[in-house]
Length: 82
Image (cartoon, rainbow, N blue to C red; front, top):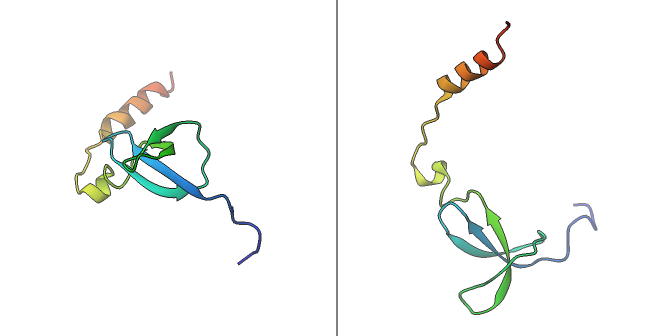
């Protein structure tokens, strides 16, 4: 491994899945301005996630049906030669 390319400033950060409000504490170097009080009473930086393992269809086993035919038709109609 190359020396000196990995960050040294790891700190505890709370990650919050905004789709189902699941939160977990981990270490990260990601920058954020928001903070949250965690279950242990300490204040940690907060990083908001759109999706995590608790809401992703692959991990939950729930498939999400996408209307791909409708999207293709909409694309063809929008960019059809006139």
